[in-house]
Every structure is written in C-alpha cells, then in structure tokens.
Length: 304
Ligand SMILES: [Zn+2]
Image (cartoon, rainbow, N blue to C red):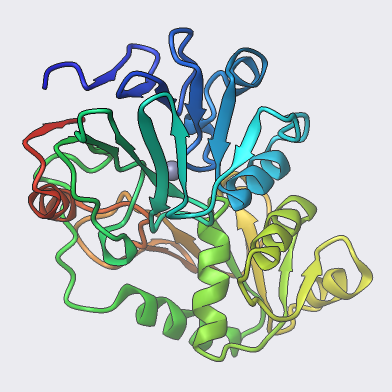
C-alpha cells in the first residue's frame, strides 16, 4: 500500500495516481482546493493553466475569488463539486466531504482502482466534521503536539456571546479575527439573538455577502464607509464592528475589543489590553481532536 499518498515539499498532498490537493504539482492532472484560506491556494493560477480539472466546492470558489481580487476561477477546467458527489477519473473516484472549518471547506476522498480509500482531512474542527473511513489518511496537524489542548470547562461560544452582550451596553464592540472566522462569530451572535447592526469594512462585507449567498443568515449588515455604518461607529452606538486582525492597531482603540484566536490553550479568554480580551475560538481541532479523528477513521497508514 506504499506511496498511495505523499506530501511534497511544496506542500501538495498527493492522493492516489491523479490528485494533488492544496498546492500545484506538475505530475497530477487533477488539483483540489479544500478551502479558501491562502495557504491552500498555492500555485492555483498555474493549476488552472496546466491541470485538466481543478475541483472545489462552489462556496470555496466564490470565497477564493472574493479574497483574491484577481484570481479568476470561471475557466472551464474549474469544476465545482457538491459534498458527496463522485467524480470519476481513469479508474479513480474522487469526492469532497464536508469539513467544519470555514464556509465551503472540504475533506478529500480518493478511491483507487483496487478499492483502497485514500483521504486528506484538509483543515477541520472535529465537532462538525464527519470522519471519513479510510485505509490511508493524511491529516492536518496545526495543533499536532500534546501541548495544544483546549480542555476548557466552559462553552467558548456562550462566553463570547455574553462578553459581547455585556459590552454592548457601553456602545460599539469591536471584534477582530480572520476571514471566515469573523462570519462564524456573526452567526454565533445572531443564533443567540444578538440583533444590533453589524458594521464592517468593504472587504469583510464582501466575504460576508458570499457567506450569505451560501446559506448563512447574518441579519442587518452595514459597511463602515456607508452613511449608516459610519454614524453608528462615530456616535459609539450599540453595534458590533467586525475587522480583520490586521486592523487591530488602527480602529476602535478606545472601545471594548475582542480578538478571536485559536492559539490559546490555557484559558478560554484572557485580558490583553485596557478594554481588550482574547477569546480562544478555533476553527481547527486541538491535539485530542486530531487523535480522535485518526482513531475513528480506522486508517492503517497515517501521515501529516
Ligand atoms: Zn484553513
């Protein structure tokens, strides 16, 4: 069963005979993009030019285009594949399965001519991810060491909601995070009936609109540059302002601020500034989640 999967030095995950995932590889006719985070789009332009097919979910295509203004994914070689649908190529069957990570994220399963099942987990969080049973498994390892465990005794989502609700009494609350994660937080707040307007800069707004197009329901949204959004922020009215982490030093400096990050293992939250808190909400499994996935996959060979 050797060599059914391989991780190249460019970071491509090679599965079976035909598939390269998440980076360009000149030897493979099929390229899979598991999700729209930049480190999974390596050499994508080249893949669109050179590969026979480039596979991803519709949501990943829309998000990747929105996050990378000049990336064009409407070429006829780009094939969007819904979760669970099978694409046959030579003697292999390729399918994408849901991964709980960001909108559109998928795992990849290749079943070869001999019936051997070869899987790549992509980035995932175990709680919403169906485990793929496989013979050979390549698994992500963002938190792949035993020190990366989050054994908190509170529900981080509930904690986040109550932190925001409490601080809204004093005016605008700023939330900082990465694309995809910001929209997940919006959804958590709406699900908890937080109904104040959400204000955001243009780019976050565009990503949020893609998430809505693909089924998220995020309520009243304003751009910070529009009259309404600008007035809300200017008058410090109760609303939640969502900004990318790289704007942390530039906006909302006198407001209540919440940064959301997965790189936090000691406590579910901690104070990092005068009115600023860090909340440990991750879109990756911690070490225990990775091990649990490996066990449940029943794979005979595992690599990362
Ligand atoms: Zn990712």
